[in-house]
Image 1 (cartoon, rainbow, N blue to C red):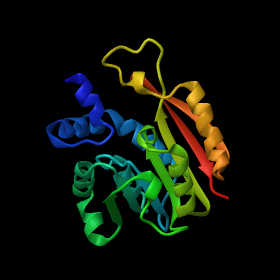
Image 2: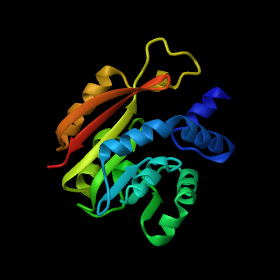
Image 3: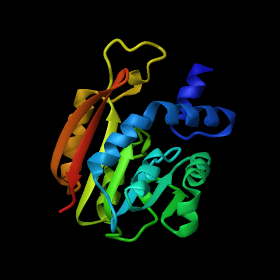
Amino acid sequence: MLARLFRQFSGPHGLLGHVAGWLMVRKNQVANAWLVELLGAGPGDRVVEVGFGPGLGVAGHLARGAVVAGVDRSELMVRKAAARVADAVRDGRADLRPGSAEALPFADGSFTHAMALNSLQFWPSAEAGLAELRRVLAPGGRLVLGQRLRKAGAGRFDRSRFGMSDEALAALVATLERVGFQKVQVSRRAIGDETIAALVAERP
């Protein structure tokens, strides 16, 4: 049962998908708020989020006055996020769709900001997804990626055993630069019982 629940985080569905969504809300509030703050979008900005889950980040960007669009591979999460920000969806300030990072259904240069938290490990190709984010960002656009880091000796019930290693984090920085991002900076923050790495980059 535990393995089935952990697998749900790659694309929640069915009854266990509702449980996974509840856990995302409970466990990811602080990390989402931190990334929203780092991204710094506000009135007049357009944000795209990949893997928005139950919509905590989406709600945060909207609260700062930005317009938000995004994709999530889980139709259940699209419905939950849309319900969370129903007024913004109705008013055209939020456009949330099922989809994947490597085929974003948005025009070139559509956004000023982009964000993804703990979703990159589920993308079929990190390089293809990051290249797509570069494509839909306007020149000068800002990207923030948040990734849970692996903790040595993490137990069976510790999500950090699925986190990113230091080597994988360094490879991610190299991939960002290879697809055309620049000024990549990495910061780390302990949140609860895990550590989140935030990668901030700019589209030239």
